[in-house]
Length: 261
Image (cartoon, rainbow, N blue to C red):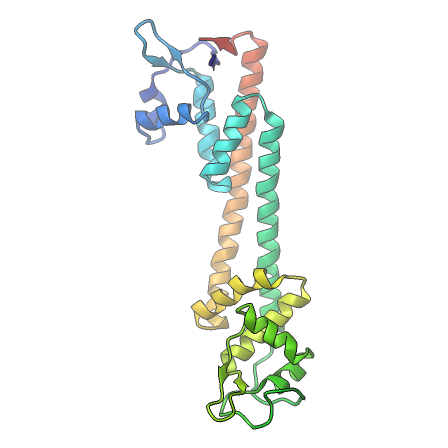
């Protein structure tokens, strides 16, 4: 049997919708999804809401920018079902994800700072190094030697999509051009930072899509701004959720909810 939380004043769906630029259908959808507590009914069968429902709506809309629609929905549903600990767990997971995203950004920025201007020269031993490459390129042995890793490691990175060397048309040996050397050095810095190959691959893809490191730096600035905005949005969402929890506690203490339909 469904329950309704009441605290006096009656509001229509349009009263909730109007202040947030929403439709009355959206309000009904939010109720069905458990984002809002179940509405009461007038003697004529129309939905009626209370300031508590308005508080739930404010909390949900404030949670979405920081946590996303799906997680915000789950948080509100847990609160309205009386499972506050589950809601707090979901919030903790979002903060942990934000922390991981910040660490990834910091690792990429650190890797970019540590990268020196790439050169095509280098010494080292290993397969695919029997003949000099063309201008601007290097073979696997010299590159591995310059990075202080084994040629087999570069082959493993190639299999994971971190580098994509071409082939010398005469010898068939791998040839790493300047972009490949850049990707290998970035991958090396991130591996030293403890990142897994599957975590590095998307970052290398971003470097390639940006067309190099300089365009990527602008993208990293945007990324940093988005993370900051997300963190601040989480603070706003937390404040509205706390206000809603306080409303629920006050309504319960006053004996006005929950009550049966």
